[in-house]
Amino acid sequence: MTKAELIDKIAADADITKAAAGKALDSLVDNVAQVLKKGDKVTLVGFGTFSVSKRAARKGRNPRTGEEIKIKASKSPKFTPGKGFKDAVK
Image (cartoon, rainbow, N blue to C red):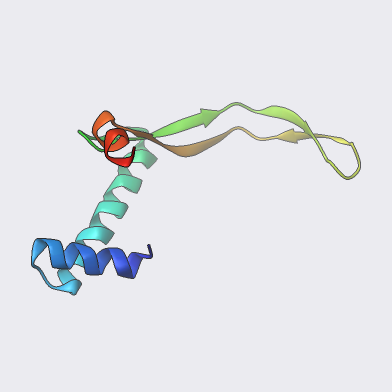
């Protein structure tokens, strides 16, 4: 499903315009990103939790040359599905 298809579905289910559904979806995505950037998490009961996973710096290998390289520490967004969401997908 693409973003446009999701917006169409939201608009139909909520009986709102596609423009309003698009703004609502964009707002959700933007606000989740802002909260995660601060280091907090977003919990939607029954759906899941968005959080930030921290990866420590480590050593790796270049697969082509076998040379050892340093991999920087990083942060990555993480989603953990809730029980209701898991059960709905089964």
